[in-house]
Image (tube, rainbow, N blue to C red; front, side, top):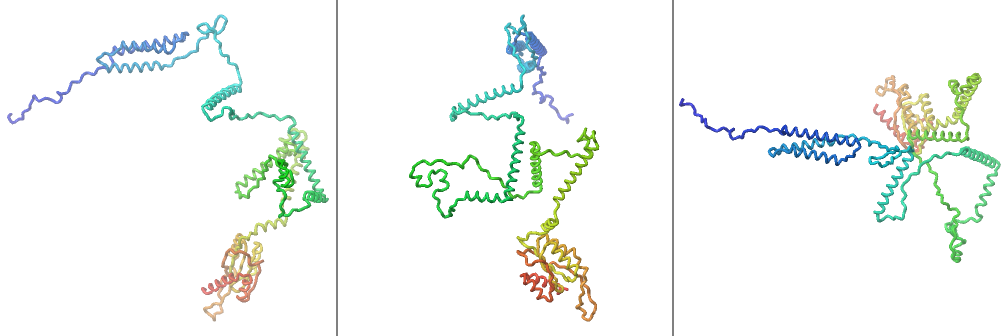
Amino acid sequence: MSNLPSYDLARPSRFDSMQPIRPSQPLLTPEQIAQMMSNAHKQIEEKKRLKELRDSGVIVTNNDEKNHVSDINSRSTIESAPKPVALLDGKKIAELKAQLQARIANLPSERRPTPLILNAEGRTVDQSGKEVQLIQRMPTLKANIRAQKKEQYIKLNHEKLSSQIAENKFVDTRLENKAAHRSRKLFRFHEKGTFESIGKKLRTKAQLELLQKDIAQKAKTTGISAAARLALLSSIVPKKQSKEDDIPVVEWWDGFIMKDSCYEDCILNQQEPKDKFDGITQLIEHPIQIKPPLFLTKKEKKKLRRQNRREAWKEKQEKIRLGLEPPPEPKIKMSNMMRVLGQQAVQDPTKIEAHVREQIMKRQKAHEENNAARKLTGEQKKQKKIRKIKEDTNTGVYVTVYRVLNLNNPAKKFKIEANIKQLLMTGVVVIYKNVNVVVVEGGPRQQRKFKRLMMNRIKWSDDVLPSTSTTNQTSETENKTENKCFLVWEGLVKNRAFGEVKFKISPNESFAREIFKNHRVEHYWDLAYSISILDSAET
């Protein structure tokens, strides 16, 4: 027992220093809660009583109601004053009361119209017995209502503007300021016969123009117009022709305002010049707008055509409306005959059918005549074809030089010549052994077509060329080589060197070079001949 550790039983605990927890007190006592509920009931009852008084006709103002409710609240507050022991609980009770009062005040009150009181004579009176003049609402138009609103708006704006002007010291009050006012568009009915008179004037004008044209044409054929024009010119032109170097006595700009014929007389007279503004008017001459040469796109051209067609259609409709042109006949067909003619087709169908067929034949004949009138003649077709093929070579001429190994085949020679003539090209064909030079001049499209002919369309490989073997001099066998066409050079030059295409056979190379030298293009031959020598050296 002596070996066991000893424990001090009198040692204090750390929990002894802590204060004991008091039991939690309730926020409100049952008596306070009962008092609050009784106050709320009193307020509700008072609200109901005030509402009944208002419905019965007694005037109760909002201030009275608020004062009454505040008295009740004050009494309830005094009665339910918190004990000095629990001040925190009293604050919370006051907050709850304030919230309850705010909710009761926000309750919607039903407002009913005041009761109608009539006296013995049947007139409307108020609660004091005085007669009440009721507002009589009469039916009116919207236009009158708008006019009244407009007058009120103008009056308010005028008052506002006048006050602003009075404040501004830089505004002259003697000037009248007109408000911006848009004039109303009114119905303007034309009098009977207005358009008939306009149509009559237009018809008279058209007849007068037709008569003037007829007179002018007859005068032109007889020679009267030329004589009359000469007589008019002789009367206008003065007899004495003034030279360019002659100084005029009076400048033309002074002649309008000067009375005398010279400056000296005007100075001696010392009179104020008279105004002679005979040819001067208030009119301004506007020149006719010239359409600029613009490049229009396909979409813009289509839009322009559509607008022009629309204007022509409107003009035609206006002429028909004015009676200058007869209205077009209805387009009657066998399919719409009954719908267009109606009762007439039922009465005599055979006659109507013959009439419809006659109109159909008439329309077809007019259509064929229009097509025949638009149809081009043989000469016009030829000119059109030439216009499509021919190209403008003023800015430059495209030249192409070809070399053919063998050009003895007459069919291929004919193809070359015919295509050059059809494409309206110029050039020359020089034939010499294996250096057959073809030179053509023309535009870019012409060159493309001729190049396709020479390089693709003509089958040069069909012609087989015999050539003696160089390796075996004693051999009598001959090796065969294919005919070919080579593009030597193509480019742009300033002017044409040749005229219509011609075939020229050359016995030797110097003669061939002389042909090109005569046209100052010997370099074409030099280039083709040098390339042929290089090709033969390689093989």
